[in-house]
Image 1: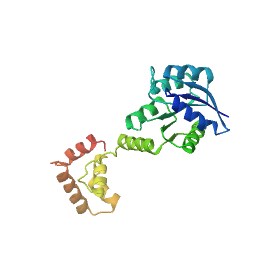
Image 2: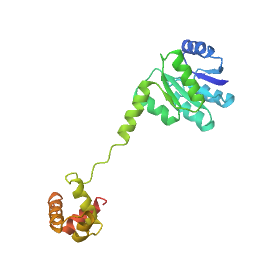
Image 3: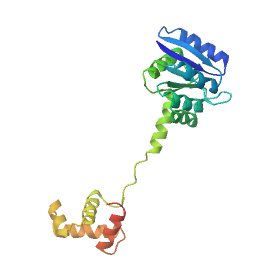
Length: 210
């Protein structure tokens, strides 16, 4: 039996959720809170499996209530159910430790599926919330800018060997190139790096991390 605490300051919404939860024999509603402070107190007393948490409530908001509940009872799973589907709200809830995020208006099946998933320790988000998370992660991990983008892949390989102290002869043997071809590569690399000497090109490569 999944034990649920419902935290929302709108009586009519709680009434609707009671009906949804009551339709699932595997779910038990053990308490209701009309404020964030009450949600924190009841979560500590009742130790529910899942807290259905609204974000906007009088007094303590849902994000801070989530943070306090999980600090005191990390085994509790918080599932946010709110009218807001903006990126800031979604990310704030996740940072507070919410297990999932649904937007009010979700149908019965989606709500119950989310409740069961949260109780099982899974992360579950509405499609809109998931897109916010995806966009954030994509922006948080930009692909590193390539070092010396003007260089071809072979020129980049040769520059790495130069920075490692390889001589032209060693590079020639490494890539099975003629000494003249290696000299031409080195000359092109110097030009592209705006370096006047081999030593200057090596210094730039090492400064860049090669």
